[in-house]
Image (cartoon, rainbow, N blue to C red; front, side):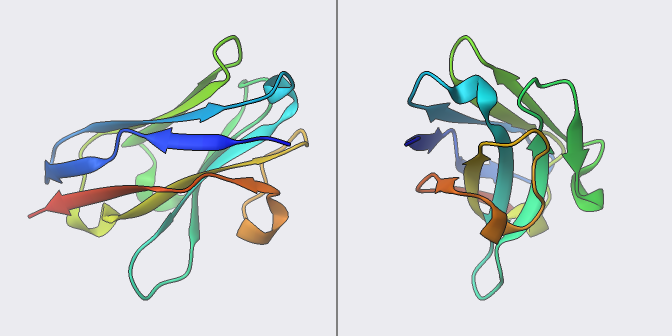
Length: 124
């Protein structure tokens, strides 16, 4: 069982930055591939970025490449999402997710554990 808790969301102007954190419980965090998803009102939950259990490989959706950076600290059981150059279209609830596998899946139904989400709002 893994409990995930996101933090760091908020309201920011376009062009600004936010850093999301996802703290995980359990001693086996380093075994889990992690992903960040987002869901805007009326839209499906979409994959944003994933990271392998070692942290050596990352995978980004095209719309955030060059602006968002995922990282993880397995000693702290935490994964981070640094979001720069934010745009109004980045507004959504952001979720972290975990699965006991090597490569991070890119579809929501492949993840086993989810956080409660954190709201990110980017004003124009």
